Image 1 (spheres, rainbow, N blue to C red):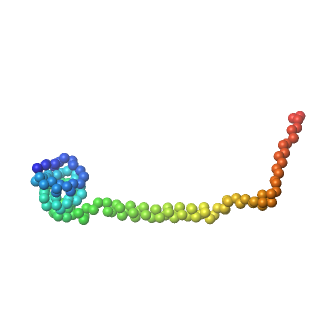
Image 2 (tube, rainbow, N blue to C red; image 1 turned 120 degrees about the horizontal axis):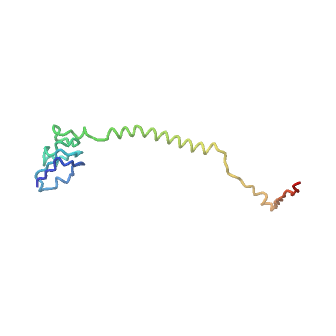
Image 3 (cartoon, rainbow, N blue to C red; image 1 turned 135 degrees about the horizontal axis):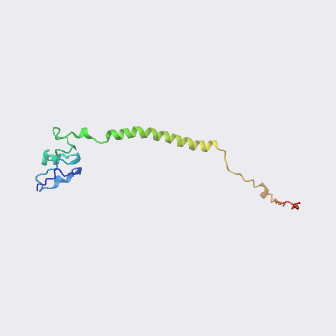
Length: 139
């Protein structure tokens, strides 16, 4: 079997299962948008020609044809930049939240209402009188 998949706008990574296809004698994936590392087993079987024209493929085995894997570690700088920015902001916001909680806890007066049970202990009776205002004539 000799599939020619060149110039088909294919994208993504090259499946590692290609090595397991024993009836596959040749393969042409050139001039697509494939990306990622090419496993050494695949390169030993198909060489480099089938992968030419895929700018985001790399390999340590064919440094003259494809870039080295160590040079093409994607997003390593981006992750470091994100950590460098987000970590101090998170720490700052954490201190603000902790400060706010402590401020609320220790600066506001206790609003616990204490009930005096002495009147009920002595079995005293409290009497409330309600006075209605006298009605006067409107003259």
